[in-house]
Image (cartoon, rainbow, N blue to C red):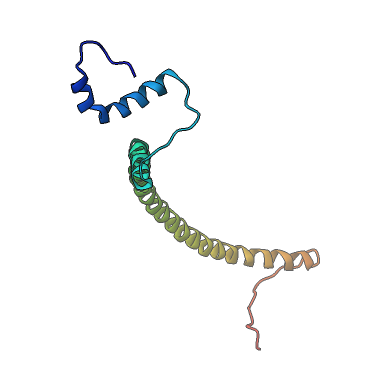
Length: 157
């Protein structure tokens, strides 16, 4: 191997053992090498591969954390919206309940009025019933006959 002229032969002989690596790297750069020998132990190779994967693990972890945060935010927003809707519905329900109590009061008043009205109607029907009875009896009488008195007789059971 040729060495520069400015270097002494004794200096090169003392550092000859270091020239093997440099020569190998120069040959690899200059020509294509048909065979490469990797002297790294498998343990170090796996550690090196693991170190190269760390950014991907960090990115996946960050994506997972962001996804969980988004789901938490969505659920929190859904809960808040549900509580707001529930409060609105309860407020409307309160007004409807007060209206319902007013309606119930009117319905009970209507029921009382209907009960009184049916009692009065039955009394009026009884009053008219006697007139109908007398009219029916008169329609059965011959011309010129008059009814002077009617005595009701209670039924015996």
